[in-house]
Amino acid sequence: MPIITTSADFVAWFRSVAPYINAFRGKTFVIAFGGEVVADGKFVELTHDFNLLAALGIRLVLVHGARPQIEQHLARNNLGDTYHQGVRMTDADSMQCVKEAVGRVRVEIEALLSMGLANSPMANADIRVAGGNFITAQPIGIINGVDLMHTGSVRKVDIAALNDRMEFGEVVLLSPLGYSPTGEVFNVTLEDIATATAIALDADKLVFLMDTDGVQDKKGKLLKELTIAGAQAVLSGKRKLPDDVSLYLPCAIRACEAGVARTHLISRHTDGAVLQELFSDEGIGTMVVESTLNTLRAATIEDVGGILHLLRPLEAEGILVRRNRELLEREIARFVVLEHDHRIVGCAALYPFPDEAAAELACLAVDAQCRDRGYGQVILDHMTGLAKTQGLKKLFVLTTRTALWFIERGFSEADVSALPSQKKSLYNWQRKSKVFVRKI
Ligand code: ARG
Image (cartoon, rainbow, N blue to C red; front, side, top):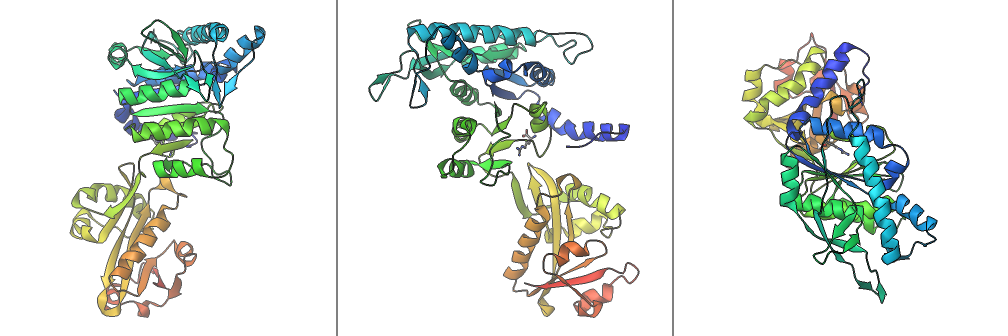
């Protein structure tokens, strides 16, 4: 995340956020969080962030849970928690507790969403919260001979009603309850409500706030992006996953398969996690998407602007030789671009010299904001493959400043005389680039 110390940093940061502001306006996000967020007193900060999202014209559906509050209520009434295969069994007495607990949490959330203190992020906020009988539920029924009674699952989401509310600029707050046509109330999990609602609304995003930072790999490293297949692999692995991951990752897959473009799993403990995830390129948690956001492809004439944008800072620093637009347009067929989320974040060009069975790798550049993500390596590997398919045996680069990067990847320094003759004659003696070569 950028550190803002000067006004120039601030301006640069604000501008970097602009594409997201534009992209998110009018989009529908479903954001789900457990009752723990309210119980821990963390909801105030979260309210500020929801307020900001609403102010930016995002259509918001918030889904709250109430598990700790329900458990407290049950304990107070000497009613134990009865789980059957991980699902709570809700009898008539427990249902009373559920209603009371959910009602209380809801009131607390509505109160916080109503704040409008001057000198706080909520000044002039004026959020209108909508609630109602939007969710129709059905009983889960009998599992292995155990009747789960008032525990239900979502049967239908009243999307017309939800859309109406959001059309009026209201923020919808859904509680973990559903109603039946016979007038019954069912206890439904927040993840079921959130996922079913996101799917029914064809939402652009589904966000779960959870206990961990997202989904981690075996070594505890955060997995920033997971495809459906990747997420399935995590779930089918042998290791024991944190409870929240086991609960929410299947929902992310379900949503993604049903067309919700992105599901984000982020920490509820990090202040501003929602903002960091949504308004930065890298995010802060795990994002589940249908297929990866990175694509490496041959450049087209439409990419010239994006490539220039990428090369200019490196040219200004003297790392790359300056190329004008005309030259780039003429040579665009030699370029590949790496896109992340439809934005060009890397490029390189390959100039073959078939007589010498060699190729020059030129213009390898990665956006400064995307350093340390391994993109340079991805491009290098791709270009190596490309040169190989053309029957070439050697790859060389000319560089003044990035020698080490190439040495670490198996290149070794060579004399200018080792260059293909055509290239040798164009060698710029003033620039004094070093030549590095690698067999491929
Ligand atoms: N801010 C972007 C979005 O909201 C990208 C987030 C990327 N997050 C991640 N965990 N990889 O869509």
